[in-house]
Image (cartoon, rainbow over all chains, first blue to last red):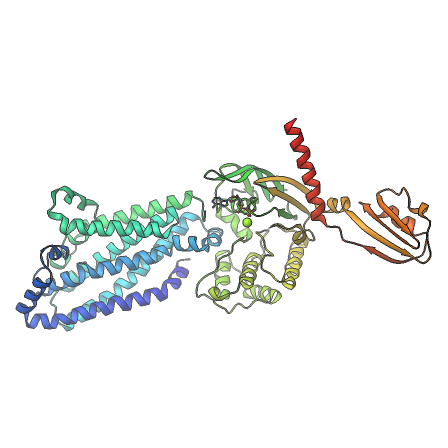
Length: 263
Length: 303
Ligand SMILES: Nc1ncnc2c1ncn2[C@@H]1O[C@H](COP(=O)(O)OP(=O)(O)O)[C@@H](O)[C@H]1O
Ligand SMILES: [Mg+2]
């Protein structure tokens, strides 16, 4: 069952990997120029991103330093968002999409326990996302080396692990809502709202008293707070992400086991 | 022997909408059961309940002696959904193989043999299959693991007559091997030739279950006999079951209720040159029979 899901995802996975890799290569290769002329570039960046926008970009550290550049340009917004969208689309294919298309009906009448079916679909999602994360990590590392980004291997690996966990968490949100409701749009909406609100809360909202406490329910809090590129693997934060994912999977299993399919 | 299907007071509501109300039914091993009813009667609802796709609001259901929730029994069932959806880039053959593996293994040769009988092209990606071909793939997957119990929701929809014949032949083979079939349809004509019993659902209720052979016996049949020379009317008058008798010279026409035995014996005294007997329209009988019954029922209720 897992192998079958992965085979179905194959094409999408290849395209996502190519897309994310292209993005990474493009942005990392600009670093070469930045490093050679840091003053102009920093000034340009400051001009391009005024106050609030800069907050939205996570404050933007010194772009001429490898870690700062990598954080602001790659790991702050764009790559996590690409992973989240990729994970959400893959997660739809677990339950909601086949249910809406009507193909799930035959699958649930196979001699496979429903709980097990959800678990298998989750494992397929995790493996697929891991594959994208591993390949794109190879690309970040290789291109980073070639432009002398100067970030140690373990720090980069820590950051990439965070992207993977964040993507997996958001994908699992989509999978769980899909398993509970059978509707793609509801699942997408929940992920969308959670992600956008969560991101705003930890960036622009961090200085706003009234909403700053919301960071505890923002997945981005556990993703960026530990500053993995500077300080290495934030074990505690990542465990929270992984634990939340596990709780969601359990919810998905129980919800799917209880309801009518295709109504 | 435990019944293949055992339903007691089985009821399903979709929110406030009624899907099925208080179904009590037993289907015995080796039986071909035709499940009839107009669209929206509750056939698909019943079938989905048997397969644990949806869960009953009330009532009890057991399939092959077990709770439908038990995954293991589902490998002994073959299911053709009423609205079969097949998608993706997978070739039909690969998808069938996948289903076969999950159900515990199906030899490729069996898939090929079925494909040949239905004249189905399995090298086509599923999303490119025409409606008729999808239905063929659906039938192949339902039959291919030789299940003890086949549940077919409107199996003949979208099939051309030749394939329909092949399908009915396959159902007969299933009966010969002692296996059980539940098939739904909205026309009796499609299932009467293979069914042992038929049940009729209307507006969520099972209103009748009849033995098809018994129904045939009850059937009114129009018969025409042509003789070599004119025959006396008296020879055919007052025969049991014979009605609407018309004798015109050398030809006799009438309708018979049930067995034609008396008429045949009476005719045998003369030289018969030609005999025409129209197949009874079971559907018509069935419907008049049960609309009478309903009227009767209504009268009782209003009384
Ligand atoms: N998913 C659903 N939601 C609400 N009502 C439904 C649903 N599926 C079926 N029904 C209702 O249940 C009744 C029985 O439907 P169904 O079992 O599909 O009939 P059949 O298969 O005999 O055509 C119909 O009145 C139909 O409108
Ligand atoms: Mg139906």
